[in-house]
Length: 145
Image 1 (tube, one colour):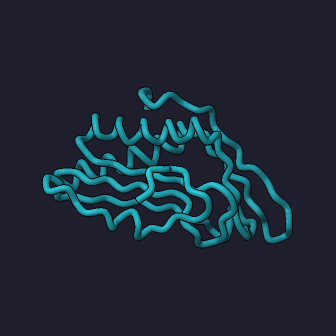
Image 2: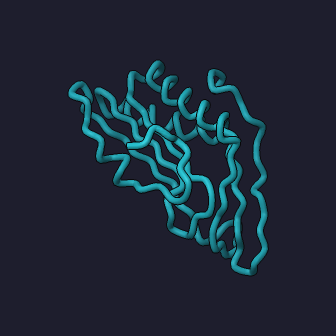
């Protein structure tokens, strides 16, 4: 598996669950986000993700490290950049931990924190040809999530 957490184009989900389970881990939680065909009642034909690459890579690595410290889990996160079609996977979080509770908690914390702290912007393409960036939120510090 590549060490880059930002990937050009859609993510290959099987790559993220194929990694062997560490022997001390009995729980695996997995989250994947995909491009929907509708947003707020408008038909969506695709999305283009933009990122501040250096900062996004650093933040994704920090999320993995913080999840390990908080939950005792091994967490991997990745986000797509560039053009994606409806149905393509745009984000993935895999958490491996000793038990399911820690794996679920780490997975949920990681995806929620990614959305709040990583500089990635979504530009939706609509079926009528219009494009629009989705309104963002101020980027928070990872330690304060």
